[in-house]
Length: 216
Image 1 (cartoon, rainbow, N blue to C red):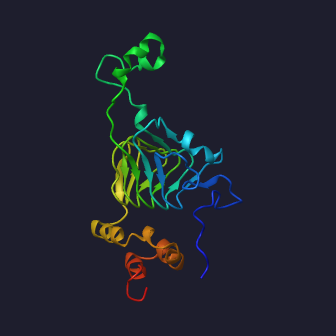
Image 2 (image 1 turned 90 degrees about the vertical axis):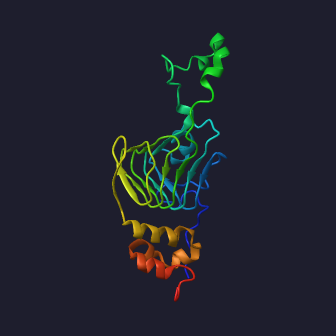
């Protein structure tokens, strides 16, 4: 059987240096990426951690699942971008230093929505922005230029600013079946054997191909 693609190679397509696998790229302990998720950018995709994950001062994490496709300009705004909004000014005076720094307590402990989580097999379109604490479900599609301010359901398609649910890719019952089969957790060799089913088969085909299924 042909070997599966190597998830540890930074540039999976040597002729296309604009594409990088994120798992072997990221170094921050606050960013977790699953195997085969990639970022595509003609202008230094290896700068993903600093150019595409913004205001990441911790402690919240960015978690991206397996087999996700991130188009050029996808950005994650992390909680460090927040400002106080409960007083007359939102300006972070203490951060400017000098005697203002004595008031740092006023700009700490900002509201925090927690980790930002992207499920498995998610496609994020060109220039999409994901706001702090958002959770994007498995199999979702985020439209080009979308600003995702709230959670996205499994297999949902969203678009706009703020992003709204356009439709789901499957019925509620079908989504439950897809989540149960969870092809992204199959061994790489098994995925290799059933690539055509994963890409173009039916849900029933996928279920029949799952490890442990009769005849699989």
